[in-house]
Amino acid sequence: MLDPRKTAFMVLMALLLLSSAAVTQSQSPTGSPTKHASEKPEDFAAVMQKMRDTWVQEFNAGHADKVAAFYLPEAVLMRWDGTVHGYDSILAEMQRSITGGAHNYIVHSLQTERSGDLGYDTGAYNVTLRDRVVEGNYVLVVKRIGGQWKIMAHASVPNPREKP
Image (cartoon, rainbow, N blue to C red; front, side):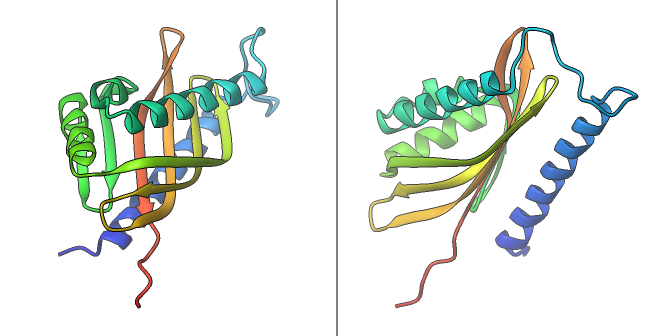
């Protein structure tokens, strides 16, 4: 059986490599990123902040369907206890988490970047479970389709539990 931490680390590294490849491919021959004339980097940061805030609000309100709506139909969700693919599986996983007692999510973004129609957000989170508070780190990879940003990959890795 694979060690979940090693698997999560490999997945995060793959996501970061994909993100850096997307940045490299979206650069012009002069090395500067290509942009739409009307876009500013702070606009993406504001979009991601709104997405994070709304995701947390809907999760904490117990609305698994509204949380799942943030994900692309072919998205992947990677967590400490496994990986799920696609909207229906993500919806079921969110519902399982909510009915299992997960609540009071708090998210703190540490870095948000974008190039063209791909971007990412990474940071730290806390979530209260029935018997403890879990702290960890996350990365979201988002894609803009039809002018709307959607999550295509979401990985969350809890910090190791302290032994009493």
